[in-house]
Length: 464
Image (cartoon, rainbow, N blue to C red; front, top):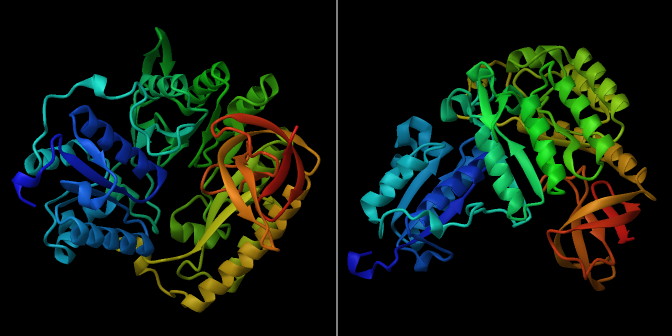
């Protein structure tokens, strides 16, 4: 594309792949671009340049990223790559496959990406902050947003390369996420999803440094941050949801805080929802993963949490088919799933990741056994989920409306319903509430509903 064909103001296409943390990185880059006067194009042919934010965590994500790069090159020709996959082999992994790439940067590299944009598509003028709304540009629907509180991770799990891609834990000063949260809530966001690589380690790298928010001294600590976010959520009648909470001992205090928050104002503030990445239950496999190996104590803690806060929704993820996993190891995992009775479970078959230390472990599991074990685990969890959701029939609850949608029943009859979520449903990864008489509801608002039926993953409801 010649300089003569460049639009004014210049237009940039953007492809964002990967997890919510990567989505926040994309939002950061887009906010900076718009502040400098660039326009975000929605079609390849309308763009003067395309940025692809990649994911490199598992093989399927790598393939998706490489395909997206190839498509951008074919459709546009001028492409800058950023994100986790960009960090692999200092960019040489991508460059070897797509030598026409203009520039490659790594994860959490907004400044470096903007420098590459300036080199190939000069900015139209000096930055002007008034080109952005106060809450910035978000890639999520207007009523919810991800709030990233830290970057990187200090763990060295053998199946993961996140520390190699994103570095060690770096926590944001406590005033930054609180200021951002308040801006978003003032702009009408009704749910904040707190994310990081290790949410419960927030502040560890700063030795819990004291910061200031609205003139008050606050330590950089996840329990204090959660308390302050709860207060903001209650003030703006919004939900606060915690993700990626590694089960350190001080998480027990978070449960107490959730219980107090729920008792004082049940439908706003810090939700009784905890996303804890457990990964397995066999002590031998957990040791090979370099994860905490006391599954019995973890089960005791879960039971204690559930008794202290019956409304608590627990979500976790597990890996099956890890190298060396025997049938006995897998049965230990199944027993844990049956006893813990978690509300939401995500599971996937182990996939070798280039650079992961687990690749050197002996006794890899054949693919057909991985898939068979995955199916068995998810079948058990489906029964647990169905039973838990069936128990909600007749209950009244607040639901956050996501969209109005047309659905078709088994007979082919079409109807308009509202798709919403309750306190126990995070967007994209959990189930939904199908409000069958909710066609007049407005996305981004709360509705009080009564549950009338349930499937393995979703609830059916009517407006009260």
